[in-house]
Image (cartoon, rainbow, N blue to C red; front, side, top):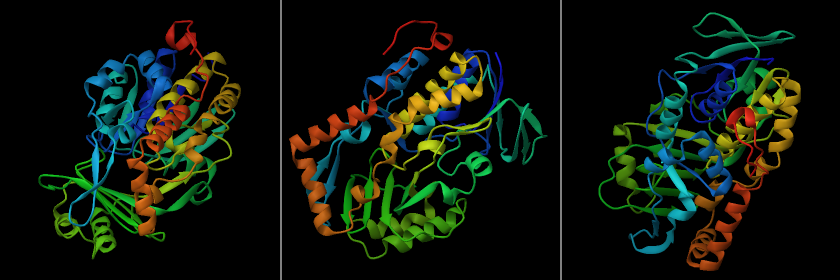
Length: 388
């Protein structure tokens, strides 16, 4: 098989999922991750529909995902006095099975650490694509050459920037930011809106979850203290329990802030470099990112195996098979749904959850998007001959 040494950037979900399949089909896999270790906890992610379930079954992890699931719970939308207005169903936010991102990453790592090389606390600094491989330099490690490089490093992908050009060419800001804060919010929960702002307590994403409309902000993505100040400014003057939350922000044990953005890229591959997961088709809080990452990893590894490692043929087949499925990531954004810009918009959104027919229609559409791919069987990966 050609192209047997593969460097994957990113050890969250897409990277280890791909590492699992590539190691099974005879590749020597190295995963490099900027963080010093696996990130524990984090927001809840979910899987929806038969396609996601089949891939998890073929990986042999569906049972363990279910064992570690958080269980999608309903969340009550309230007014400023805490009175119920509507209910956001757990089936809508949590799919068929929901699990903390950190727990899923740990599960995938457990399945791959023995057969793959993991390098934590390092990052790629340059990629030079040649006829014989990709010469890679790192922040800390010695330079190495790999047959292929995969960017599975998220919506702010370092690999995409190095191989395809600046982030501004490929990532579209959708006018909103979100934040996850590990705060002691006390008993009770709920989701509260004012125009352009939302806060949810005790939900599946985090103890405190914020979404707010904003012009593009200039800040260091790793400056947590600056993130706290941005959040405090954005939520100043809001009602319900928000003043007490803002007062507690300085003591937040963990806080993550990022833009709600969407990846738009013409092709997933360039030379010997290919993108996977959010790096290729991310849509922040879109509800399909984890499923797309896991299914995409299966398809990419399967096409490499089917092509005997011929990366040109494999990358074309991966894109042809997957671009239609990933179209859901190019549609809309969660910001305007979670934090409508007007009071009328908030009322209309709440009415949706009071209508069983409209809710059923949305769930049915979600299932349609989640299963909208002919999932091939790749015997080199699964050792079976069953198609779905």
